[in-house]
Image (cartoon, rainbow over the protein chains, first blue to last red):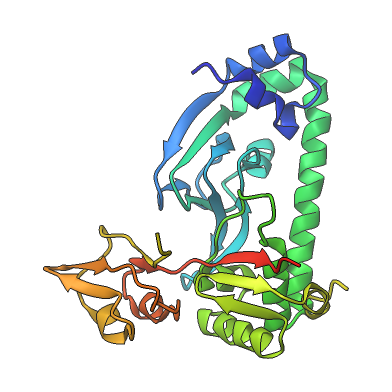
Length: 222
Length: 68
């Protein structure tokens, strides 16, 4: 597949590469389409491919032995997933599922190694991407350890508020529950509490943050 | 177009539980599958989503900041 060089240029991984270098990188990349609900990666299977999202949204999650799902993060267009296990050489650390029809670009581990040897700049870019990922996960741990459910829900609302960035996915209460490490009913309760306190209001399918400062305080971010 | 809950027909088993909990008449069972009728009366209570045994119905929220 002739990957668009202009699109490759926008990826954090390949920032700073020349057009010739981008063209060379592009020759290693293959395209894949995942339908809504399709499992792209299965947790525990050998990791072999690093994916970038071209369009659509992918959910990265872990599943407990009892079948409970914990969403780690949503991958938006321009972002990557399955980086760590591909570099580490082990198994997929988490599952990945398309939340809507998604177009992906994949890079096999062996070909990634060739790119890294040829273009050291890519290694530095990857360090930056993974550092941000670590920060995000530390934040999640902090959330699950220290915050009450309503605070965690408040944080999720702030993280997924749409402004000009329309790529952010809409969320069901079940998805918010999976992200907050709780159950659907507790999310519903938290949203009611936030509405009663005047911090948010509901308008059918919209959750409107009416008091951003108060929601930030609730989330422990003020 | 009015925003309405989304139904994945491939998952719908025609049990009709969602119709029974819907208070606004937005859901009807046609044969063995659910049809969604656009209506402003749907208050997005999400009871249909909660009660569906197969996860066929989803009521996703858009999160926005109030415009000042």
